[in-house]
Amino acid sequence: MKKPFVIAELGVNFYDTAKQENISPLEAAKKYIDAAKWAGVDAVKFQSYKADTIASKNSPAYWDTKKEPTESQYELFTKFDSFDKEDYEFLCRYCKEKDIKFMSTPFDYTSADYLENLVDIYKISSSDLNNYPFLKYIAQKGKPIYLSVGASYLSEVEEAVRTISDAGCTDITLLHCVLSYPTQNIDANLAIIKTLKQIFPSLKVGYSDHTLPDSNMVILSTAFLYGAEVIEKHFTLDKTLSGNDHYHAGDPDDFKKAIENFNLICQITGSGKKTVLPCEMIPRREARRSLVLTEDLKAGCVLTKNDVIAKRPGTGISPEFSNIVIGRTLKQDCPKDTILTWEKI
Image 1 (cartoon, rainbow, N blue to C red):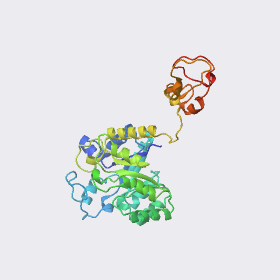
Image 2: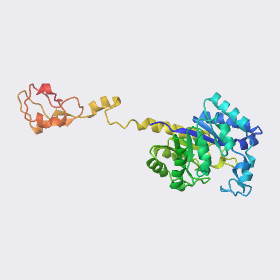
Image 3: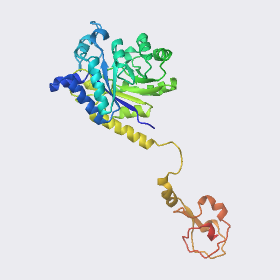
Image 4: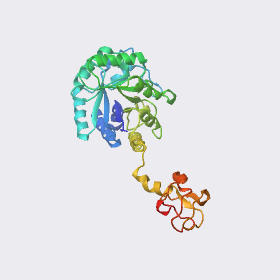
């Protein structure tokens, strides 16, 4: 069993940290990368968009406005769209210095183009699942694609996969996702991971999580046990920050705990091959049973059923051979509790 590829979705949360700490968004982004590296994740992921190309000015909010009070998508995106190609190039270089993979979700053709030289994997949002021209455009770039499939019907997932495959990309990972912020536990529906694996056996399957972090990160651990090969979750340095994605994100300690869980699961899963392990050899010998005499017996005595009992250790004749031993003759005098061996009969 192999640990899942873990993505810390930085998104644009670092903008709020920059404001809180009175530093530049770029410096805050670096702090997020450092913290994600400490937590042990494999990749950090940003979001590349401009408000003018992602949402109309008449786009209503679909998130929990008690947590993020902004009523318009356009208004929210305007707060967090200052980064350009050069900023992502800087962050990509910084990730390489820190030995952590750089990712960013493109939300328009311009970002898809400049990210081509920066990312090894394209992550596509659930919101673009049926944006077939966009899927085709990215697929033709020849890089692996992680596609979130939240808020979709199976027929739409099949059409998206067909579009990407027909455009030449066969390295596709589907990420089960619930497009609700935050996702209530009752809506997490992790069994979809198994469903996707059954329906798309040639594709990898993962999980993009929007639930509130639980104290032991059981939700992500369960997703892994259900077969998720990629796990993505929003990341923050401070879950108490208001607005945007902090309220349902995990912090560095949450991610560290989840990764420790993944490593433990891999360790205890083993190979599935039923055999005697090296660590069991001595216990196997000492804890199994042998045929043992129930009383003192003389040489020449013909053994009966009442003369033997099965006791530990298993260094003598195994009880499985009782029918062969009964009726045999002792070669020597033997006291009670003698462990029978083949040399003695």
